[in-house]
Amino acid sequence: MSSCVRPMTCEIEHSVPTTGYPLSLLWRKKTVLKMPWKVCILVFFLLGVFSMSVIFRFSNKWNNTQRNELIGVSPIHSKALRVIEDHNKTQACRTKKKGKGIWTVNSTGRLGNQMGQFATLYALAKLNGYEAYIQQETYDWLAPIFRISLPVLHRDVVRKTPWKNHWVHDWMSEDYMHIEGKYVMITGYPCSWTFYHHIREEILREFTFHDFIKDEVNKYLEKVKGTRKNATFVGVHVRRGDYIHVMPNTWKGVVADKAYLDKAMGYFRMKYQDPVFVVTSNGMDWCKENIDASRGDVYFSGDGVESSPGKDFALLAHCNHTIMTIGTFGYWAGYLAGGETIYLTNFTLPESEFLKLFHYDAAFLPEWIGIPADLSPLMQPKK
Image (cartoon, rainbow, N blue to C red; front, side, top):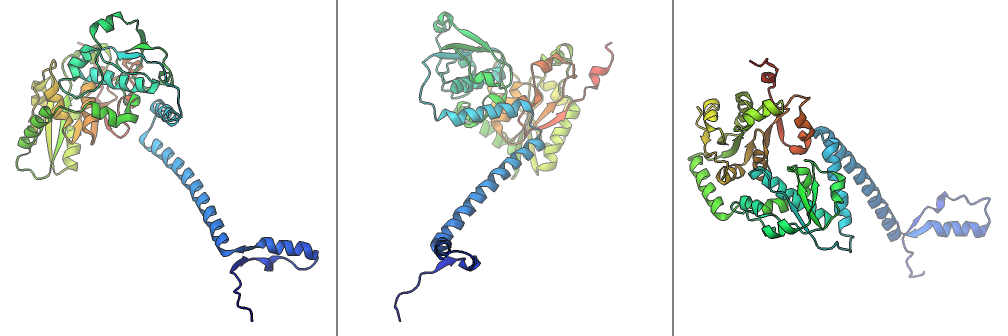
């Protein structure tokens, strides 16, 4: 008896008919259909991996489609994000760098506008392969509050440089990825998350508060917390000031009213055991008259000084969640705080010229919660 052991094979030769074929052809068929068992396992493993990859790709595509339908992603910002994603995929393959130049942004408005201009400059300069610089006015607004890193242009450089002004609207567009020019001055009032949300961590790093501000705010919040064991801080920013007149008279719109704030605060009171509302506003007298503080969970904390808003903003940004009304100040508070953000939506009439400059879906993150404004005051006849 032979001592050789016949190797285990994967044989399916029994399915081959043995009649009607020449012996040589039959032998070749049987040889082809005999495979060592290890090869069989490898083949089935590779087929399984391929099948799973195909299923995963289609499943991922379906999930993304479903998510976009659920959160109501509009063509504006979904297209903007696709543009940025496509750019990021090809960025690593580029070997030719553009020539050195200077990109900056106009310095207009107060803190919220300055932050929007800074973040947009940071993102667009990076997308187009140029160095970003800020002007002295931007630095004066942001540097006392944040640990920003962009270099500052001397005023003589700003004055003597042959700038190419490039106006941008307040949402990302594909052509903003192909801006030509070595010396570009970005103009307008850009603030939309569609410009920079793909590099959110970098933007948050630029808007890191100085340590002395963190310490001061944390001490205040700890004092407000008192004996509450499960305190949840909700920053509330109520924009009043010039908007009381600008919105109805210029833009056919409204500012937040008492009913809106009641609904927004009610949401957090229902959801959390010990909510603590930290209110800041440039109309604090109105807030004290219209916000229900009878439960002992409301603290009118801000000083409302618009020329030096660092304290108010830091308080809001260090809360867990945010209630904003309108304006870039409240938007940035919500963006930096993270957590849940409630905002006033549909605050103008449909025919308002404001909607040519402002798109709700590009202004507020998809996961934020919008409460529609009461437009009935605009329907009443003027006295």
